[in-house]
Image (tube, rainbow, N blue to C red; front, top):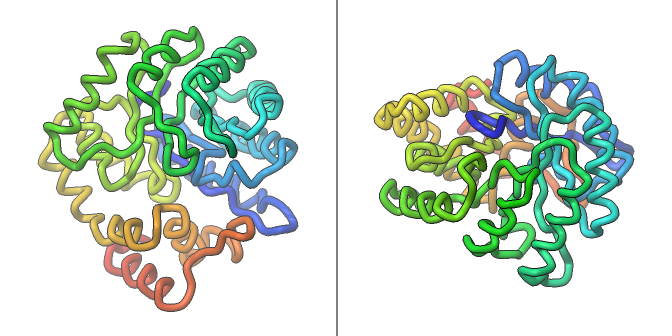
Length: 297
């Protein structure tokens, strides 16, 4: 399951609650495009800002709207007890897999993180993807720790941070990790601007932000890379450079894709939980110009 394109939609919301119809339509569109899996309640889905009850509702809506496409549900939280509750609700909803980052306020040790995954895995009946995202969790996995965690029976994928946008360096990084993990554990790339490089370097999956809004665009890049067509995959990524430039300028992908979703009418305004805000003023105008230039309607 943890292969190909895993598309991560927004969870549109305001301070009164989740915009359920808008969310369901985002998921339905991904299912219609026949993505390989749908990843909900990742960073793009603003999981850290939602209550346990809200997350249970999102998990249920996701599976109901996915038309049989596998749904991977993020379960990360500050307390292990909440992670276990999130896992139970996601499994009850029919999730095909789970995604877990070591979220913490206090800095965690390697032993604490291993014990955390070990505890959670004991409660799982579906496979787990380890979410390595130091930009939000402020925890840096060593390859050796990944190797230990990957031996746990429920672990089936590792979602790694962006690789260098250099094929040789990316191949070396993927090979170094693969040497320490079981053969049945996949490696997935995050970071849309380097997805082509990561896939061509040997990653099995692309955990994609832009795929949550434009699945056909992300699928074309994914399929080209899977076929070994480096020239086409890189060309498709280069065509999206104006979008990648917005990611770099505005501190990542979330605000950019949320702004795009508002501008294109996929979601209503506001769509992010406070205190997060979509881009406004000149920044919003820049996003609108890129949408028009790339014909991203």
